Amino acid sequence: MIGSEEDFAAAIGFEVAGVDENLSSLDVDAFAAMIDQVGAEYPNFAVIATTLRTVRSATVNDWGAIAWSRDEGFARATHRPGMEILDRVGGGDSPAYGLVRGLVDGQPLATALE
Image 1 (cartoon, rainbow, N blue to C red):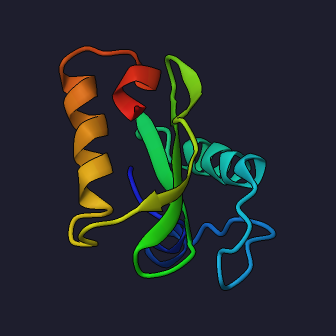
Image 2: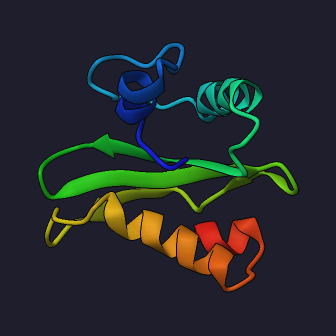
């Protein structure tokens, strides 16, 4: 399962505690706690991941991600504050593709997430 905090809430009913509506402050531990709950509720999920994006403007975001697998536990991508965005199209799809491609290639979870 790969999604944003809104995806987890809308699709399967799991919310991240303490996240404000503007996503101005993202507590990684709160996202990890939500992922723990999802993993417990859905034992068929082998990997669960979410991006951590704080939108500063249309062209600047703080970006990161966390992922969890049953075999390896949690991994956290490098946090990239103030990342400039050339084109927003694919902003969620490209990290998902990178994670899936890395896992298919047999990379460890942390490497695939990066």
